[in-house]
Amino acid sequence: VDISAETIHAAVVPMKGTPENLALGRAMRAAREEQGVSQEALALKAGLHRNYYSSIERGNHNPSHLVILKIAEALNVKASELLARAGQ
Image 1: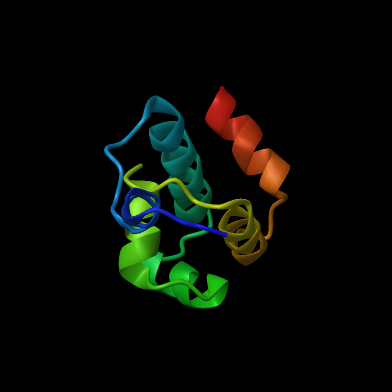
Image 2: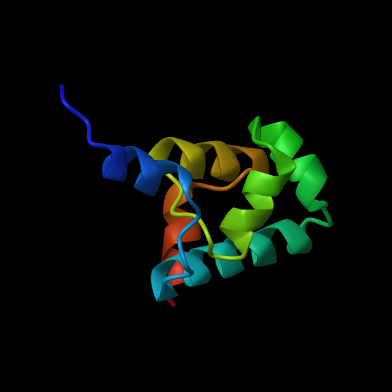
């Protein structure tokens, strides 16, 4: 598989917050705050770096399906619930 430098760059450089990423980040933050959990504690539980998790909450990263599943599991909610909450 031939992967261009632009593809690699796009995969590792934070994105400017899109409306969808911002909404998902707000949904994750609300669920986390409802449980009284810090960003650092949730990131640790999800197996993510705290800076990366913080960036997701701010809408600056487009998390993969696997990352959304890890965060949902750490929050003890279904990924579909987070996505539905983001869509509201």
